[in-house]
Length: 92
Ligand SMILES: [Zn+2]
Image (cartoon, rainbow, N blue to C red; front, side, top):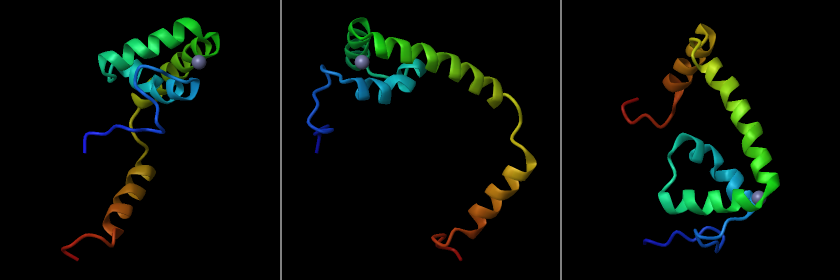
């Protein structure tokens, strides 16, 4: 245990796809400080990821505006029946 091997990439070196994976966590502030530093280092060198971050920020702004609205009753009903139908429930 204790190995964080993820495609053999060390935390200090980020590729563009790593950065894209981590950007949402980064924006939530959920990234560990060394990861944040590595990500910001990549961003300072990479115009493409900087641009991606900018567009992601405007997208998330739109999504969080949506989130504030209540979940439609239809969706809640479907979710409830989905949970009720779960075959793995040990008490059924
Ligand atoms: Zn990049």
